[in-house]
Image 1 (cartoon, rainbow, N blue to C red):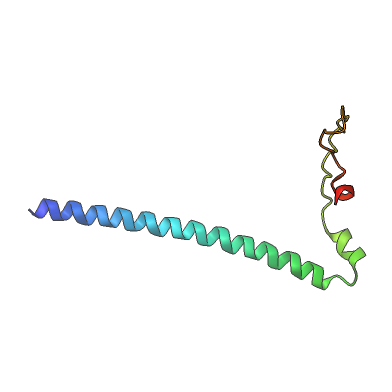
Image 2: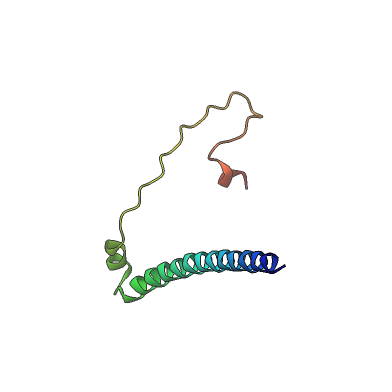
Length: 86
């Protein structure tokens, strides 16, 4: 009888520790994401103008342009012409 209660207590302790660990990881990820956003906004606010802000930021790689597909017939989907269709 006592052994059964001990097993129940151990199980409850393990599950509660697992839940606390999951909540801690989620809190860490959300707080670090918010801190990155705050840092970006602070940098933007502290810059005297946009040129100074752009110089402070690391250069981002441009996405490579995909090759244009030739339209074989009139009914083919237009690639890159979405703005013209609207």
